[in-house]
Length: 86
Image (cartoon, rainbow, N blue to C red):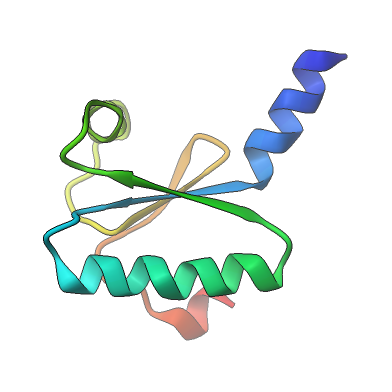
């Protein structure tokens, strides 16, 4: 039962993998936070320079940031076109 609750929470969490030295990455993360908040989703920023970010890069084969991960799946990488995200 607890495992199911944890999985449901993970599916609602939006992870944004970004580079803290890339202005467009940081801007996309800010806009995604606003988008997620309006939909009642949790969003978590993960730096591509940190070990957790490196793990995502290797595990999911991410080549560009920002990258959006939901439920452990890579949804988007590179430039985000916000009208499509809606």
